[in-house]
Image 1: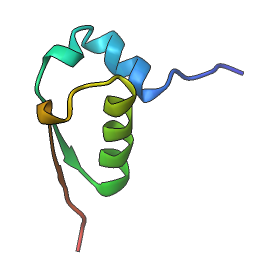
Image 2: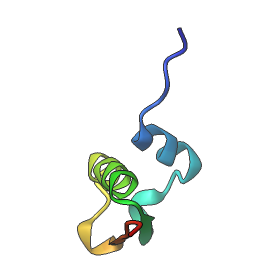
Image 3: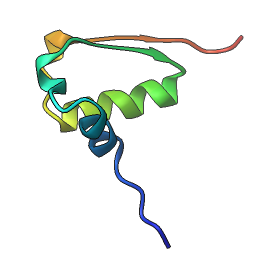
Image 4: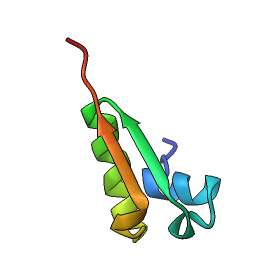
Length: 57
């Protein structure tokens, strides 16, 4: 069975200097929560994280 990397590991692979960037997250609540958790795991400063959640009515 192939093991998947965590969301944080995938973000770090895509954006190696992510802790030095502003990050904008917009999406459904479960996706946004997963990405925000990964950003906390990567110690991206809170002031650099901008998030908006939406849901379908």
